[in-house]
Length: 451
Image 1: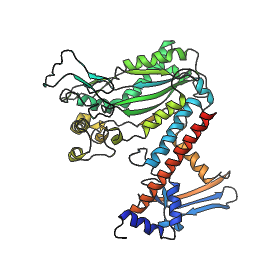
Image 2: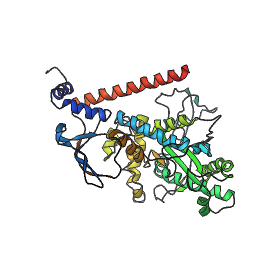
Image 3: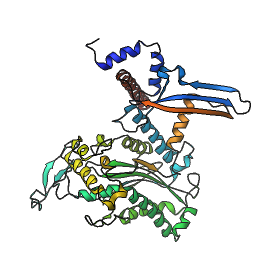
């Protein structure tokens, strides 16, 4: 036993406990969650008319008198099991807004829909992958005596990709402040699209909602240069949302409105004696692709899967920051990140100390390089919600509720995480579930090909 690792010894000890089968059931029920939440309490369900006790559960007989529930962390680097579940929920949330389902009518598939990509502007030349990097005929140097060109062809995994040709020429201040205002820039973009659609048919913006409603789901993704860009599904409905047909003039004007707004909208930063006032815009690369129910263009399922894939990526996985907050300058210096990312984190810390930028909370969000928006956001009428999907799944697991039943819940938090042995068991369960799903997908794909 002494030659075994701590995790192995703990796992053997757990297996010898009489309540181990129930512990195994709980870990399996969480899908092998890496960092489950421990709850203690009870749930009582009564008949709303007679007061008869229908169901009662408490944790008094559970291992350790507690119940394990998922941590629900979206990041694959933190909890692979919960990130897979979150990706699945994201897929269904986005897909419902494209094809219907989850209380969204299937007619949305035939509405004007776009897949839009908006990028960050340039803050300085960086190394690129997949082509001749930065060719120049004169091959001169910048004011810091560094080459302005690069004649190499970098592979996608080359560590040079995304790195500035000259760190001293790169606008780290602009990069960080653009991140801090990216969510506001998106909000103004959506408002301006509505305004342009309204003005194109002679309506004032306040009357636009009487004729149409713009819905969207968008995800933020870090590029190799550690700058956020946005992928969004944009859909146009009638005034009452998904159940309403949009006006006939909407489809022809939506693409032009999106492209024009992407070029036009801007956000001004607060004036700073050290920085001045910056004008922030979207980058020049704007991609707008129509989504068709039939014919050419990206498939609806492919778009939903694409969005879901990026939602589960943590900052450390993309190489653009880390997955936990920093509280001191030393935390930044000791972080396992590239020099380019570390410089961005330093810029967040430095700018966050200026009183004019205090509302931006740049030090709080230094680990995400100043970006403080959600990875996934959606408008209210686009489709269902994560809460509705989780409630539906919980009801499916618990069984059909009795009409008119009253449920009383009394729960409290008592801890989180696994012991070393339980963590080893959870990792094995999570791997088994992932492999089973992969086998099922392959079998489904093979069956589809055979037909």
